[in-house]
Image 1 (cartoon, rainbow, N blue to C red):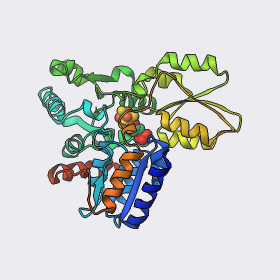
Image 2: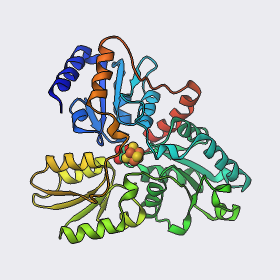
Image 3: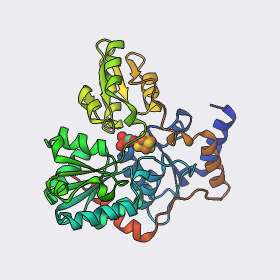
Length: 350
Ligand code: 13P
Ligand code: SF4
């Protein structure tokens, strides 16, 4: 990265001292990660944000829904800064508050709403988290989706899983022993979600029709092709991948799980990793004694994660050092109250 920008970021950070705390998601660019005080997956970063009440400014190097969650979990005095406001998430955008309210009305009409517990993936807007809190549900991340579903099925007979159908389906089938027939997909772009009242009554998992535009691109062909290309390879994928990909893989887990698995791997072992490319490249560089390849070379970086680059970070830090607070992410108090219920429920999962 540009040495001038590196020096400017370092100087602004040093001037701010303990006033600023920089969080970096594992999918961020190396040029940004080098300035992070902590790195993590979305679960770890949510906890780390809550654990720093003394920092006036939390600079979130990640995407919008993560910065919203940090705002909800930090004190009122703290301000959360997202270095580029255009760093959204296409998956989170796939479920709007209006669409989810309509879905709930349909569950009420079908006579099943009382037995439904919403579970919202961290990768959702604060509005969706607030909906989840209002209806007695929980947030989950890819690190704790199994525990979240176990908890939810103790509270009710059915789960409405928002917005990632793949994480919901993979967790239900792999970890909860449910069958694919127990799952239905609610499509917000079809009248009544494309489902009849009978289908809703019969289903155990009602999956929202959302997906990650990065992980959703890995295919069964990606797995077959890499097995041919790299004989003896272990295929390790993120649970946001399609069910058929997860079924064909050798191991499945969140970004923190992937990092730990590679730390524990034998020298000389071969790995194909199906997750975001910034992380896979960083892991390949960190483990020169292992052969680590990207599961499918036609899949790209997460374009919104990549919007946070060194120029944006420098701008955010220099603004803070000059006494201006740019790009503050604030969740309104009413939304925050209910979203926090759902986030606290997640943090309290056994
Ligand atoms: P985790 O950080 O929970 O593994 O989620 C991956 C992701 O897609 C974040 O946007
Ligand atoms: Fe959203 Fe997927 Fe990018 Fe994560 S990797 S921010 S889920 S689009």
